[in-house]
Structures are given as structure tokens and as C-alpha cells.
Image (cartoon, rainbow, N blue to C red; front, side, top):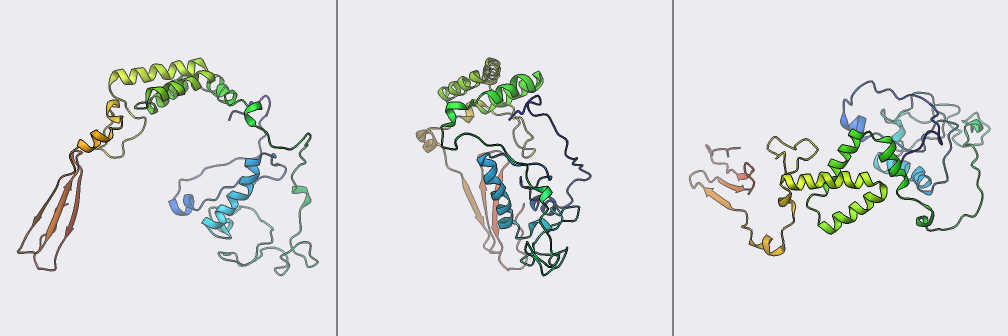
Length: 285
């Protein structure tokens, strides 16, 4: 979404500084646990139902995926002292409470345990009117936000790349569905539709489409023929020859090799089994 700064001025709350690349993908990336309920004191949550659900669901997912005390993993640890009631349980590598009386893990208490900090409470949210179910289609514009993004935020170069990328995804799509997509783009902005339509016509007339991405391997083709992207009919698929398989066996060594050649050039799949006979040749790789 686009949040206009004139309506929602930016308020600086801090700075995130990236000082290194991940050294261990598992430790630094896979175990990272982000959650919208990790906020700076003074920031509140809107009553948006999706956000309210995520405040619970994200942390609950982390507890299931990483463990009860996922916040104690190095990648998730806070860099300042934290006072809480977490004690014991799986993965509690800190060994219990780190502040106050370790036996006072509840609040209120009379034994010097952690106490609630009222100054960190959420600010109040003004609410008025009726809370009831309603059809969001009656009052919500599905096109205003993306229209602002397209016409006011994106540069001409960015709009050109958007046209090319979206047109590429429409290559091989049935014509009636393409026209339905163009109708939606026109409701966003006429230039959005005309730009994508022009790019798609150029791709189809050129007879090939260069995907906007790096090839998987050096053998991956850099261009795709749009005609080959059309799914074959059942009759056409049944008429295609099946994958050929040839096998050779050697009686002296007891080895058996089987080679399955793919229809695509340069792709070979090997499966081999060697007996314990001395001198049995290894299959070529």
C-alpha cells in the first residue's frame, strides 16, 4: 500500500544498521523470528483485524517452529536488558530469570520480582460508531492505492519494467483471460493497460520472451518461445513419444548400469549398482 506522507508524516523511531552478511544461513536467517508485536514503547496497534490476528499468530508460529524461548537465540536476542517473567522451559539457555528475585516469576509480587511498567502501555485508540459485519466492497476502493503507486510513486523507467514483467507473465495465457486482466489494469490507469498491451504485442510478434531473471544453470535457455508455453491438448500429449530407456549389463563384473536420456538436450540421469566383484568398473558420471 501507499501511505501518503501528507496524511501520515514519517516519525523516526530508530535506525537499523546492517554491518555484515549472514555467516550461517541457518543461524542468521532460518532462525530469525520477526513479529509485529515487537514494537518501541509509545507505538500502538490499530484495530485492524488482520493485524490483531498477526500479533498472536506470528509469535505462536515462532514458538512452534523454533521453540518456547526463541527470543534467546543469538539472532533474536535484544541488545539491551529485558525484564520479564519467563522462567524454565525448553531452550531456556539463560538459565531462568535474569532480573530481580528468580522465585518471583509472577506479577504483582512482594518479593522484588519484575514489575509492570505502565509508561510502556499502548496509547488509547478513539473508537466510535457501531462494530458490525459489513461488505467491504461497498466502501473500499480496490484501485485507489495502486493508482497512487503507479501514477505518482513509480518513475517512468520503473513503469516500463512493470509493463514488461507483467506482459511476460501473460504470455501463453488464454486470450479471454488476458482481456479480463487488461480491463482491470484500465480501471487502475489507462496508461497501465496500454503499456502492458504494447509490451505483450511486442513479445508475441518477436516470437520469444526473455525472462527477467538469472538462468538456473548455464544450460538453461535465456529465451522462451511463447508458442511452446501453450499447454498441449490431451490428444497431443498422448501422441508424444515416451522417454527412451536403454540398459547394458556385463556378465563378467556383474555390474548393471541404466541410462535414461531426457528429451532435453544435454540432460542425463544415471542410476547404477555395482557388485562386490573385484575390478568392477565405476559408472561414468
